[in-house]
Length: 118
View 1 (cartoon, helix red, strand yellow):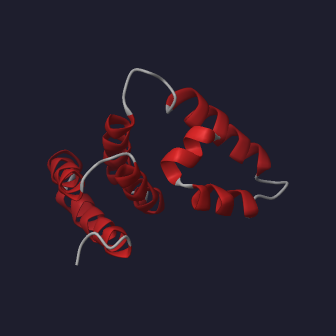
View 2 (tube, helix red, strand yellow):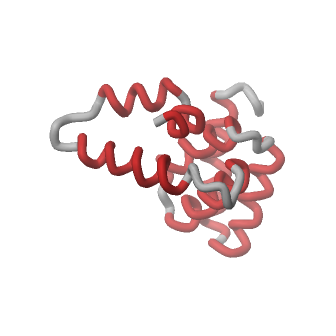
């Protein structure tokens, strides 16, 4: 849970926990243990590198809500706005221009909300 909070923010995790129901509780537990406890906590990659990989995967798979969440996480993990732009450009080459076009729109909205682009 500590890693999840560090990467996504207390506010995000608190919202997820507040919306948790008896039906979704096992899934939230699974995410916390598997994604944050097992994978994000491994020593093989730093958090910046993990953020690059996650952003690329979210672009490739069209997981727009998760992409926006992980743009915020990438900034928390130290990626600069310029580096996020480069990730999206790189993904455009391998994932397709339409995917990158959507990613730029979503990332710009998130970064504008964070006060980091105009």
